[in-house]
Amino acid sequence: MAKNLRAKVPKSTKLVICEVNKARRDEFLATTYGLLEVADTPKETAEKADIIITMLPRGHHVLDVFTNPSTGLLSIPKTSPRKFFLECSTIEVSTSVEVGKVVANSGLGDFVDAPVSGGPQAADAGTLTFMLGASQKLFAKAKPILALMGKEDNIFNCGAEGAGLATKQINNYLNYVGFVGLCEAMNTGILYGLDPKVLAGVINVSSGMCWNSLHQNPVKGIIPTASSARDFEGGFPTELCKGVIDMAVQLSNQVGAKTVFAPALQHVFEVAVENDKCKGKECRSVYRLFSEDGGKALD
Picture 1 (cartoon, rainbow, N blue to C red):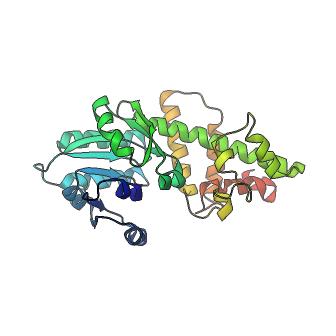
Picture 2 (cartoon, rainbow, N blue to C red):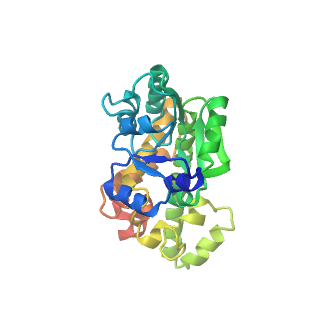
Picture 3 (cartoon, rainbow, N blue to C red):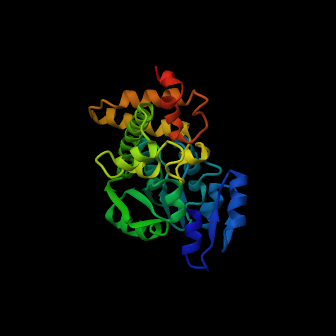
C-alpha cells in the first residue's frame, strides 16, 4: 500500500512512515524511491502529516496509536491543523466506533473506518477493495486518496460509522466458510483418486467456483501464486485469521443472525492455532488439518 502511495502521489509530496518493525521499515526505505521521512511515534507522524492512514493488527493497538497520552496521534496540540484519519485495520466494530468518537471529541480532524480486502497481491498491484463507514462528504474526500491503493470501482461507502468494518467482517466470514468447503472438496477428490489439477479446473468453470478456488487453492502445484506454493510461509497468519473470524461471529450474534457454519468454522481455527501444522503459518495452512493424518486433528 505504502509503495503505491509513494509512486502515485506528486513527487513533491513527502510520505511519512511509522513502522515498529525495523526490518520491514528498513526494507521499505531501501526499495522505495521518492521523498520519505521516518517518524518514531504516531504523535510525530501527526505532527508531520495531514492525511494519516493506519493499519494495525488488533483493536487495542489502534486504541493505543490514537489515544496514548504521550505518543498517540491525538496527543498533538489542540491548535494543530485538522487531520484526516483513514483507519484501515480489521478490528472490532465497537473499537472503531469508540476511536471515531474520541477523534470527533478531540476536534483534531475527521475519522473514517476503511478496511481493505484483497490481500498482499492486491496491495502490491494497487487493486485493493476498500469498504468505508462515512458520510457522503467524507467518502468523497477519502475516495481519491484510497484510489491510489485500490480500484476506484471497488471503493464502497457501506453506510454510517462502523459499517465499513461490519461489511468487511461479513465478507471475511463468507470467505473462510468457502475456503473450508474448498479444503473438504479438494481433500475428498484426492482421496477418491482424482487429479487435483483437473478437479480444480472443473470447479473453476462450474458452480463450485469461488475466490479461493481461483486464487488460493490449498493444494500445492495448482496455483503458482497461492500460499500453498510457498508451503504457507508468509502472508496473513492463522492467529490473526482466527481473530477476524471470531469478530465476524460476534457481529452475527450481536444482531441476532442465525448461523450454522460458525461453530464448525471456529472449531477449525481453534485447532489450527494450537497445531504445529498451522501455528505461525499463513491461514490457509488449515488445509493440512484435513489432508494429513486422516483429518484426526479435527476430531
